[in-house]
Length: 616
Image (cartoon, rainbow, N blue to C red; front, side, top):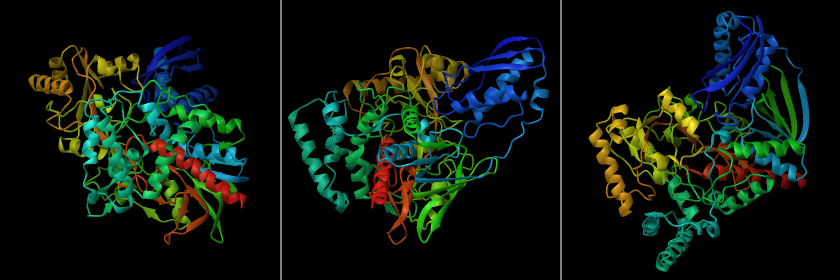
């Protein structure tokens, strides 16, 4: 090979390419540097640390990909292969070299107060709160990197904070949405929610009568929207809605979770109040740093800095149960060695089962059909491990048939943050014919069903002004995606339509109508609940989208203290659960932004309850 430094680009996870600098000598790979700033932080960081070291140390490209980051792993390997090829070497020979020998580690045994299974947001919150209670904590994470689904979350976290929200003006359509909600007949509200609903009706009436033009919110509005947003009936005629006590526990403590995270070091952007798709209302507290990584790196660093132990590449396989009491976990590492953790309490925070399609198909009672090859927004780690562990202890399950699809996912990868993802008030969703087909401000299952009825694939249309409101992207990433053909851009709507195979006149007419509705503040076609910007400033963009599996609402049955309950409704001693592994809160459909509120609220609650048990 010709010695030198080779600058190459390889396929990544969040961006269309990753710049790499590979230093080669005549017969050796000397150094690998990856510029991963275009990648999703927290998703593949371990790839960029581990693989270059392994390749250089062992002088082979026949290395295993890093679990949970296969695309980025192949990106690094292929990038080095490209550099070798440019240097006149044979990349296939390097790929066929012997694999690094894996030495089996010794079996290990630990003893601790609290063992947490899963190092996503709920698990790290439970660990941090347990440490604040002066407890010894071990966290088990089956993948090489912490974060789970939280690293892939959009960032806005729901919590009603009226004093802050009132500083922002109401959008066109929001007041009408409140009036429509308040007009819901009382008999359509389940009995346990009726008193709270009547109080909310009074709040809305007073707000509307005042003539105020600020953004209204209250804990009661958040509660009732969470309840009604999750009230669904499945294909078998079974109705489900959120457990009143659990929903109220979530809503009443969500803002405390925001303050707690702030105290630990998470910085929130107070200059805007926002919402993700399907949230129904603008109450999102968005971190300054991009996506869920903002929470994960702060919590992960805090736990490690305060004495918590996080064991990655360690998959919990069984609970230790003695005389009906859960007393620890038996886990395995990829090399086959066993990790035994004896603990006074176990907190399950391993997420749902959205990356386990056969399990989704087994339990699903909401969707008529789920394809074998359906994409998912989930981390590959989210396969139902925590639910299966709970079942070992006799846990009851609730709501398992209700699966949430994310309507605005990447058609190929299932990812959320490719293309332009804007606040829903700026969504313009058009089908493959160039026509709008739904109220873009609606719940996720409503949007998904509408998309499926329109052929699955659809497009989000944006202009230059709407582009500026997009979450978690950069102009560099946008330009790269346009070049790669995964995002479409044109100087006119007519040209944009031609690029994606639509009739130009149809798309132009659709956007002209939409702009007139924004100006009038009313959508006679689909009754869109809120508007913000028109679509009229070139260049114009079309982001292809298609529904993918996103969230599993069902899980282990818990009480308001996050104790896991058995089939008789009794607490299972020593066992707690928080986050997507638990069911009962979101029922048939979760509101966007409620997952982060859930994991950080019930993660803390689980730790508080565990501490109460340990202090008895």
